Image: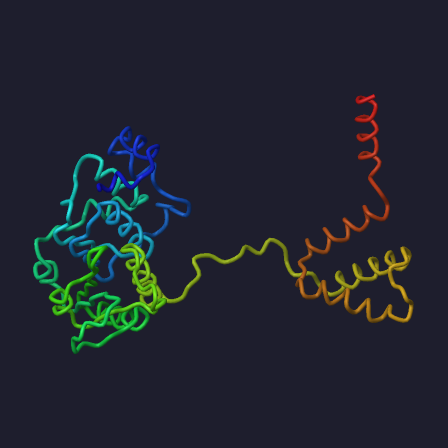
Length: 300
């Protein structure tokens, strides 16, 4: 089965009509902003005998998400397509990370792919009986980040989708990386495995920094403003007979105030809430009543 056969018919038809130079502009997803700084570097992502071109595309997308830029392919089953539907499927799956596909290096063997690297990690879900350190991604990537910063070059091996790395592939690695997953269902999609490694690389290399912070649209309400709102609200609730029985009024007022205190209200919050209560108490504004009356007249 080809990569294109895995796509829905409508998607295949659209891809057949898509010009090659349109991939980057048409397939980028929400959150993509080429005006921002593009992170690059990190360990090489080495896909060993990948089976489907579309999976290579998804791996490129995962790499781009976390600033990984060195994609190496060892003997892809379908070759490394430069034209046709396989290329279109891979480029579509990359969702804008086409630059990584275009720069991907092709090798005939694992030995050639890792020749220039100082340290190799092999990803596997199975115990291989080899006397190597076994690490989680969270343990491995801080080590890699520190050593890459010192000038070393590292790589991560990922095996074929159906079988994973064979024992000879694992044997060339310095350490094994395995994922803490459900032991009864440990098989990961190839791009998922790359994504998890990329996430831990990003954390180790750049820190746990939020990409953006909430925008402060209104300053916190001063206590005087909040207490004035409480007084107004409670007076109107008392007028409407809300605080019953009368003996429970102090407790009810405290509970009501605590509801609003938990909101950590801004000035705009207080203005909005007060305006809402005013309209409920006083009824519609005169202009709103006039508009409503005009609608009724028109309907009549």
